[in-house]
Length: 234
Image 1 (cartoon, rainbow, N blue to C red):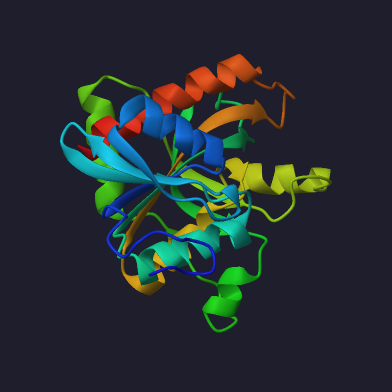
Image 2: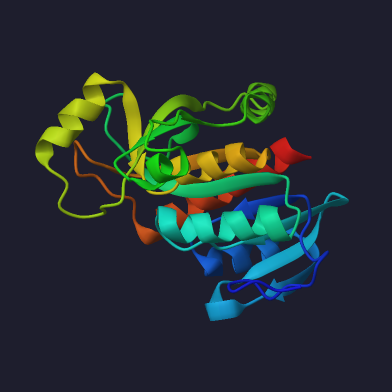
């Protein structure tokens, strides 16, 4: 069985799938952390892999950038390939002064400027939230490892550039920790198809201070987040 965007066989995906935006990061995760990893889909070079981690079968697949792209892959994974847990691992830009570069954030819920969820929810506002059981599972792992982690509200935007300065003030006032581009759509899809979802984000830049991680620092932060995610899942 294949879909317009995934050419894997019916049983190629594990019940749990990690979702980085960059397909090359999916390749890196598979080759670095998974045993017996096999590339199972490569349509438009959006690479997906399945392997095992400490004996547990796990998949990883790129989703591209933004809610429309993420929604395509998440929908096909749960509707056509039986994936039950969608774990986004990505980056974000901080908007609160107490949030620092390299911090890890669990997106407990996500507001958005996109119209996607209103279309999905009959022109009403939808409360896009992570699966509580997954949030608790990841927090328990952080506590066991004495790892600091933030939990809170993120903002999923359709616009990477040219957001008005006033928006940052609004986000701060409402307690939003960071801005990213996928969580709200992923959580709505998980709710619609009754599967689990969680977005784990590293702070790669700060919208207040204009600080930005270097390429090498981004890769180091990403590796730590992947290792934490895998430990929480198994």
